[in-house]
Length: 528
Image (cartoon, rainbow, N blue to C red; front, side, top):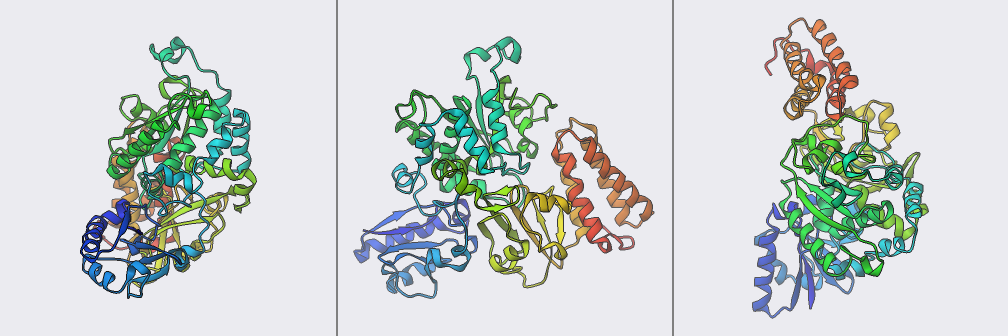
């Protein structure tokens, strides 16, 4: 049988991948072609979706983007044998966009059937867990620490330090935790933050839809390393395909002894469940997420105590995002040194970068830290989709700074970005051409904070609303000098007075727009 791969990733489905799969199956029958249709994850070249691949003796040959009208013609041209066709892109892994990537976390994504445990094992899955089961918990934590892995959700906190804190933390008694039923619950937890709400980000979704066993394996290793026996994936409700894929993979892992009691005969227990969020951006903040998991309103908690000491239900809790946890298996499989050899400075390993917005070749690029924005935007992204000059990019989601062309040679490195008042965040890059109104973008950032604030602290709750009003007066030309001074003062209050990063980081996009694009704020009597 000839294997034909059609992605089941949400991005591919949105442009007709299901219809393409059905059409290929329907066309193959009458022609007597024996095919096995595999619904894989996405390779991350989203501008080519639906990307159809055919397994040939020369490797997998890619065709795309395929439409329904193309299916019959593809068969006529002999695409099942890798035949020539205008949509033929050649060997998938030789496509220039893909060829030079350094895929560690996404090595299997788009290659395998995401809900097939056999596929996962055949391509190196669970080797990290096998090694971990032979190690002491402290040795596992040390390997993660020595790898240099930092949180990929935005804060970039060293994962090993967080794990060490939970490993060393005693679990409180019920009367100390504040939860009367705490003694009947697990003593420690692993929580995966899958509330991927930043603009221009989709790497978490791609892993959960395209290689869910890798996330499950990473969480299991985290549980063994810290003494946790229960894990939760806090998934945004806008990801229904990820929900189905995760639940299918969790069920299979449990049936085959990779989750639940006595994992693979080790005598160790760990299980995972998925919980859906209700769509609040603030629940991407770790303590708001915990409140939501406990069935409460998603509001920020005061710190201390840190979640690593008193987290879910008052118990020590590791909270990492999807990419952080999905990076762990390769570290355990190949060793901390292998992972640490990628990157620069204190930014070790690779980062899945997501190109979105006004970009010709949008998609996911996994590279070692150190690549520049300019390389990403032009060598991989191909410049703007409109063909006009790129004026600015926003890196790190709606709270990230707007970076002008003069900063495009900045390497992707946590400290390099921090030194110019920017942040890498979750690795999402949203591109704007020279038609963008940066004053309007600044206003949007402040309004976003006002809409999404949990309301617990005054600087964020009130300051963001007043900020929108100040920007409106500034854009209307009312006492512009006074309004700009007031806006900068308000941003300083937000930065230093907010309880969490929502209020604390909102000044990044506002002030970067004001500093780098002052002319956009100077129109007389502008309308907003």
